Length: 230
Length: 103
Image (cartoon, chains in turn red, brown):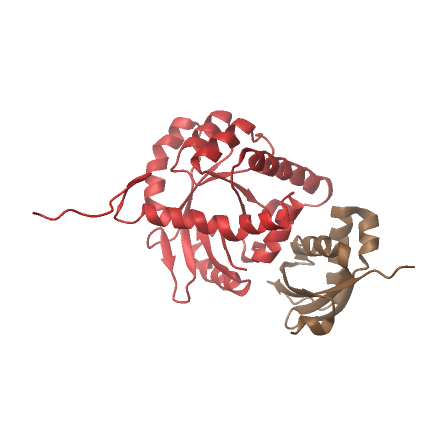
């Protein structure tokens, strides 16, 4: 069982080695980082991949719209935190956005209408389980409630879900099998949890690798054969 | 009394700080999480028992009932720290016998 963790936050590039070491130990084949040099994807010798991730946020929709094109060109994974309805619905429809990240603060609700829009455009709901490791009792119960409700809303609407760690420290990362069990805790059946952990991240990666190929023109438009001079 | 079916789980406990010397620390951390997440009845019914733990390698084997296996794994996976060390619990294999874990 292998997986890619699309929600890792490496704040200091010097820490990258320790994240790679931990990820390899627990059987992951890749993870994301924000401030990495060397393009949207770095492939290491042992087949391990480090993907550049951009979390686009701003004070309003206009601010996000200004940043999104640039973020898409430079990053393998583009995520937008789930905030206001206006931003969430716009991001859900925009094909340049890969992930709508659910915030554990529970300030903003994840709506059915947003999930339906996202389902039609292929945007996934990202759930980061880091808050579950750092809380206990009532606080954790409230986070679990919010996560379970969001998972149910997404699956009912046909929107894909991605489970990631939200790790800021290597020890916050979990193996694919461990993440599958966290998925079960969030109301997914074991087969669906396995898809969420082991299949969906690879599908996003594959889709985005196509975007970076020279044949890609726009969403749904690709160069199949180049004409000669004759 | 009907005897419940047991399951064994092999695991690896990754740790960033000093190694977890005391088996009880680990066992208590899993019990606490199990109790907090699933309640007293589930914790009692799990018959959770730490069979062995090699604190140098971080490898060990847990025993619990078949019906509580998923709950025990989930509870263990959600342990963020033990004492002052951050930890990551990695479930490896499950089996009905200890011998089966090594196959």
